[in-house]
Length: 271
Image (cartoon, rainbow, N blue to C red; front, side, top):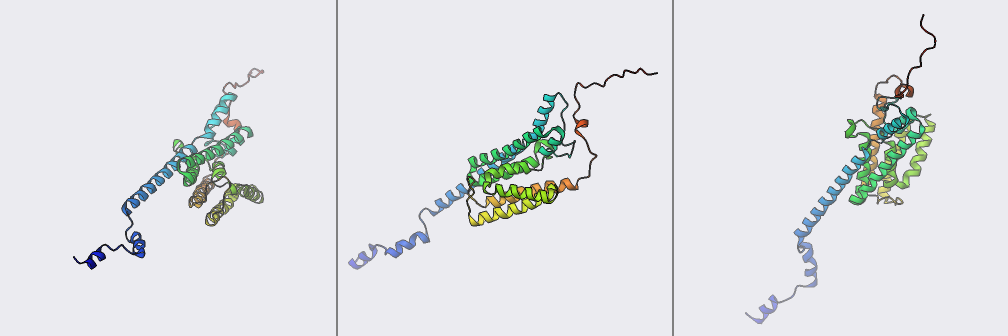
């Protein structure tokens, strides 16, 4: 072998050749791809776990538990909110049948379980887990498996999830809902439709602009997905409630009969 051939074989690659080599075939490229796929699968699995956890928390029957406790405390028979009043197991129907104090307790409980579900989702799967758990909580409240998928309308639970998922929009949401409710003369359905449409639009705008959301998670694609899913299930519940056949009005007096109530004896004997 001549000295010229030896120098050619031992020649080091040029700098541009070394720069192009990782682009053509990166070292351990298949290992990097496998690690990326495994990490993607782990993130997706954690997000699914967060959504399932949110559904379980959201399906907790707050109204049923509070109603039974109120009846036991007052020594009365328990009220089935699905068969009394408006038929909705929510805070407003409970307030009409049991009193505003118990309705406020149910409202706070529904909001709390929505917030707790979103916080649990953040602990499990980060930002996307927060949105997934928030959506799962609203779906669980509206369609709980324990009650034959007959749940509430999800407004209070959705407000609780928004405190964690989208806190920057909460003042706008409350103001818009109150104004629409006043202009529509108490039509809750109309206020819900308008608020839901604006909520989805705001979530999409927040995600596209990458705006901050106070203490909420980063605005990923999960934010508009969360807003769309929760608004869809709430709107569906209001539409089905309006399409349901009207039932005869039932009052709290007919539904909450004291256990020890006895009919007073007449002082006038029969002839």
